[in-house]
Amino acid sequence: MRPRLRGFTLVEVLVALVVVALGLTALMVAVNGTARTSGLLRDKTLAQWIALNRLSEVRLNVVKFGQNTDTGELSFGSRKWHYDTRYFDTSIASMKRVVVRVYLGDAKTKGNPIAQAVGFLGGSLAPPGSTIADWTQGVVSAPVAGTPNPNAPNPGAPNPGIIPGVPIKPAPGQPSPTPPPNTPPNQ
Image (cartoon, rainbow, N blue to C red):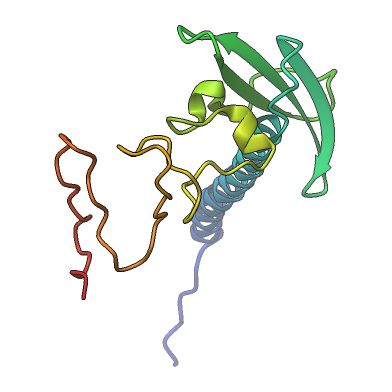
């Protein structure tokens, strides 16, 4: 007589299927969460790019200050976006704080902004000795060799300009300029 082989009972098979189903459910929840997070990060990245692009547009249109806010819609990354740009006064009269907020969808679906960019705009952003008009109209106010130098001890003396390799002589009573770090000495 041969020994009888024992197989799995129906209860054991059902318990094994429940364990496998719970494991697959946990795996699907993790994959779904990762996919959702990846989509949110993509949306946040695109929205931040839109906000920074809009801030650059505002900075390039320096003379258009009129309103305190403006809005717009655009299509970017195969999606529809809208933004609002707000201008706030600062303690410096010629300077404004610009806040750009970006939302997903059209202008009717306004909720929490996905991204926000903050910048400053105004005449105080120009380097000392120049105005914002010089920057927007392409005027360069650097010394040019051979032109009259109004700051020289002899006002009719020509301006030496900036010549590579020639040290800059300080004005009388001014300290000698020091070269920037890691600059090779003049030869």
